[in-house]
Amino acid sequence: MPDALELLKTRRSVKPMELEGPGPAPSEIDTLLRIASRVPDHGKLAPWRFIVFEGNARTTAGDTIAATYRADNPEATPDQIEFERNRLSRAPLVIAVVSRAGPHVKIPEWEQQLSAGASAMSLVFAAHAMGYAASWITEWYAYDRRVLDALGIAPHERVAGFVHIGRPVKPPDDRDRPKLDAIVTRFGA
Image 1 (cartoon, helix red, strand yellow):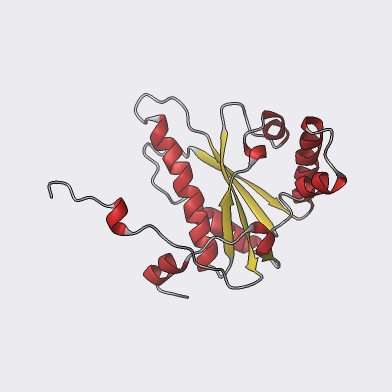
Image 2 (cartoon, helix red, strand yellow):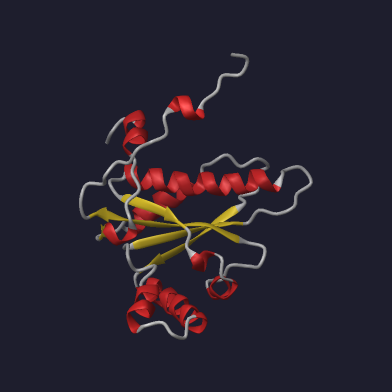
């Protein structure tokens, strides 16, 4: 396993359609979720939760996504409907990180949302550390109330992201990263 700094420097997002199986075993999924739960969480609120989509659950959820898309796009072709149906089937494992942030007497909602984001990022790093690749995405269905209801996401909850996990079909390409002098200032300098 690479050392921690090398791990952080080598993480790359891999498109869901470029991920294949086999995906993580049940014990590995538990490890991923335990790691994703070890994030800053002011007040110990656990302002996030996870929904695991694996096996046939991915296509069952995809049926809902496709039906919703079809309802909004009656002119959609069968290929477009099938594409939507396969949204959560492109990778062998998809884990939704759901933000449960809400009003609290001490903990600002913003901090709770950031904790959900940290959870998703920890999930991505854990997958990389275990030899998998991941992609953290939200797409239209992450914001569609009909799909969210069907997936069991309460009205006060929001999807922080769907993390697609699998094995890359090819080595991931790197992309240009921001130049530090463009994004860093030194206070008082």
